[in-house]
Every structure is written in structure tokens, then in C-alpha cells.
Image (cartoon, rainbow over the protein chains, first blue to last red):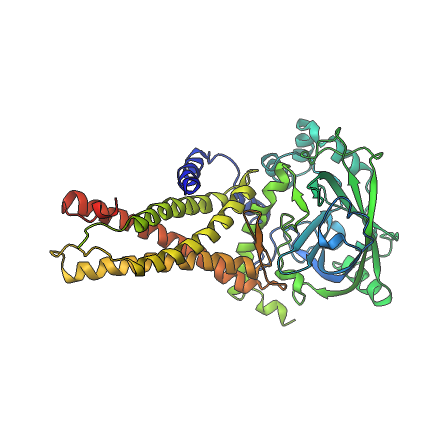
Length: 325
Length: 172
């Protein structure tokens, strides 16, 4: 009873102590959607394609986590490949970032959403500076160059950017968790990790044409064969700051391949289940926990605001014309 | 006739007052925050929301077991009806808030973790339209509940300071 009374006093006090000067999820999503709102679509990474298949776990992470998905065996997923940007009909090959998202519904109480991008790190370390970075991106090349100059923490990101060559397939990219998480084992021991999906094939962009080049390439590939990725975990040491998403970890860190992700099928996003899913990376099963990374912790609030807006639009029939295509 | 609420009813009333004000404040805060504590408050909001749902059921059972002081006899029939309606509405909202909150999580495929003790199940397939219905309902119910709580408090103060009757004292 005392706890309840204490919280009754404490929580409203935290409320009053909040400074409204910080960027809110509403401001963030307003900035992402820009002046032209594409109703019913995600405010970020609006253009995508649903994928499905299974994760074949080899059991090698069970020492570090008791999450069911890592027990030896297979877990089905509903996922999504997408490109950065708020326009659901943007040209595939012009987007600077490509993404893979996964949803594992292992059981009614153990669900996991994974959101991954091609860059291995963020350019900045907190959501408020990230907001300024998006403003600079929208303002043009000069503004973003000045932004990077003013933010030395973006060095690891710039190193990646200068060496990155976009491939000719969603299936040939490396997708990174960017943010770090803790794996928790039965003994309640914590291990900070990042992960990436390592492709098992290469593809050049030569010969690709059209607005939907990557989606068409994916459809043609899946008509012939399954697509396989190795799911690789990188273990942090004491020397790494798992709470800073802008800092790369050295290549010498121990890596463990947890198994293979096998993609077997695809669907247009408005016809597939992936469109309904909010790939909030803070929906985690028991055995995985978030770090204190401020950008990771900002994601839930921002994703929720985007999801609420498009859910309301879908309820109001915003996509009915599209889905009859 | 006892002119005070029973001790158990008074404890329920004030404990749940503190709990509901905290839940409403946390809700308003967390939907407007990108700060690192956001997911912590979100987790507490869900855990205490489940606790509030359990408490309101016990509270209702307790209410039916106990005698309730009569309203002042000089109140008009209309005022008595409004007083009773406001109390029925308060209980209704106390039930509807956690139910809508849970159902929006259920439809979105997000299991609700309760104080790291256990998890409530979520749907294995996400339904964005059902999510939207309960998400919007949860938000609107919260605003009406805040208005109702204010009305309830103002009425109590009116009884005490203007009408100078026993209504507020019966709950102290």
C-alpha cells in the first residue's frame, strides 16, 4: 500500500519536472512525414515489401540467452525489406539506406521485433541530435556537410559511408542492429551484443532499371530460390560502450553465428501481414533486454506515434483504393 | 446509520486516487517523450494498469459488501441522480481504461509484462484496425476520466466549503 501512495506522489512530480524544450515524438514524426503525408503508410521507410520464412537456430547462443528463438530449431517470421524515406512510391535505387525488419511470434507471451539498416552505426548518439541531422539532410548537401563537421562523433558513420557500395539486391546487403542489446542467460548474466545479417550472395546493380528495381529483383530471385543470411552476433567487451550507437566496435571482437535466416516468400506490402506490424525494436522476448542507448530508447515513442497515425488513417479507409489494385 | 465510509472503502478510494492520477500523468508524459526513461515509465504504466484493474474489481466487490452513507437529505432528486451517475461513470471508466489499454496491446501483438513477474498474452497476428480502435478509445477515455475526476473533486470541495455538509468528511 505504501508503494502505491509513494508512486502516487512521485510520478506526478516527475511529470511536472519535465522540460518541454526537448524534441517530442510528435515533432519527430512531423519532420519525418514532411509536407506531403502519405496516408496509411509508415512515416519512415514507407516503401517496402513483405517477406516470410524461418530462422534456423543452431543453438550456439543458448549459453548467453534463454530466449526461446535461440534454442536449436526453427522459428517462422514475418518480415519486411524497405528503403529509407517517407514516400511509398519512391525509386528503389535512389534511397541511401536499405532495411530489413523481422517479427517473431514465438508464443502469445514471447514476441520479438527486429529492425535493421545497412549502416552499422548511427552518425549521432542521441535522439535530439538525430533530429538536427534529419533537418540538415532535408536542407541539402551543404547543410549536412556542415552538420558532420560540427559533430565529430559521426566519424565512424562517415568511414562506413565512404566505403559502402549499394548492391543490386535486397538479398546481397548486410543489415545491422546498430543499437546494442543485452543477452540474458538462465544465470541472469548480461552480455552486450550487436548483430548483423550477413548475406550469402553478391549482386551488382548493373542492369537494374525502374522505380521498383529492388522489389522486382527480389520477386524474380524468390521465384527461383530461397534467400539465406547468416545471423551474426558480435560480443562487446569491457572496452566497448554499448550505450553509444555512433561508435563502431573493433573487428577483433568475438563473433558468433546464431543460425541462418531463410526467406522463402514475398507479398506486396499492402497485401501482406507486414504492413500491420509496428517493427518497434523494443518489443523483446524474455532473454533480451535494451541497453541505455538513448537512440534505442527513443525508438519506442517515435514508432508508436507513427503507428498511431497510420493506424487511424487505415481505420478511416485511407488504403482502400490502393489495396484494390 | 454510520455517516462515514468504512475504513476499507476509504483506503481503496485514496489508494486508487493516487494510482489513477499517477497512471494518467505517466500516460500523458510517455506519449510525448523520447527520453531514455520513456520505456521504463511505459513498463510501469502497464504493470500498474494491470494492478489497477485487479484493484477496481476487488473494490467493487467490497463496495457491495459495505453500507454506503446516504447523500445529504436536502439535495434535490436531480442532484442525487447526478451524484450517483458520476459514481457509476467513475467505476465504468476505471474498468474501461485497463481493458482498452490491454486490448490495444493485444491487437498490436505486444505482450504486456507485469512487474517482471509474468506476461499477458498478445495476438499472434497483428490487426492494425483493432489496434487503432482501442488506441483511440484509450486516449479519449483518459481525457474524459481526467475531466470526471476534476468534477468529482470540485463537487467534494463544494459540499465541504459551500454547502458545509458531511460528504467530504465521510471519505476522510
